[in-house]
Length: 385
Image: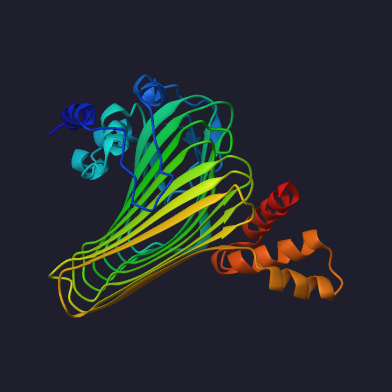
């Protein structure tokens, strides 16, 4: 089936699905509501193109830029990848999760193809920079060859009053390993929909480090699908709001094969009137015997107006598993502040240290320049509390 045919089916599906959701639990006072007029820009985007040669893999408004290739990593538009037989149409799509997912898969106008070859092994980081200064809807495919070991650092930077929708399917080959660093800066966006689906083969290994600076309304979806046995995944995420930002984040891990392992850990820091909904799902199939899967979410509220909800769900369909979840929503500790202030620190510096300690398990493994950038944002948030 052609891309156009699959996209048309998703357009029809998106028209049937409702945008208005229900509260996630009876106790929830706050949930993400998206209106019809907010999604209209995503239905009307056009392909803008990108001029100029880039040293790193770069896209602008969803369009791939010209790349000074080093011979190993293949980077092209989706159209070019299809024309040259580097990919199949169905690799670009997954089962739509909801209306926003169906819109992305039905109305996308552009996209990129990135291929890491088999047996590739390097400590160098592959940089992917996505910039936007207008509305766009794009869909990408990243393929990691078998027996390869690689690191990808992906930035999504939105400037101007731009609504965007970006979906990416990442397919890991057998016995491959990927460290995936994703930095999402949508602070100026009225609506930002980001979807990442990672399909894992047998013996593949995945580590995700996700840092988000949300805009007025962010909807982020991570789907980790362990199709092969002995797959191992880790998700470490952090989101930071300082004014009136809202982040709706869902991390869904699906175990379909035996001997899988997973660890999901999320930290949310909320100042001002910002809000976060974190939905963590673990689904262990009846065939996924001897699986270990764990989920933890911790939200830290820095102001009385901030709102946080953490919603963990475990669905287990066999008895040979180890799985657990936990979640906390708390205010900054007065005892910790008093202790640090008794050691000569002022209130602002004491708050910074408490927050840095809270978030350090997430940002500690990151490259130093990235972790330092995030700590600078933490200081900015403290200054606005």
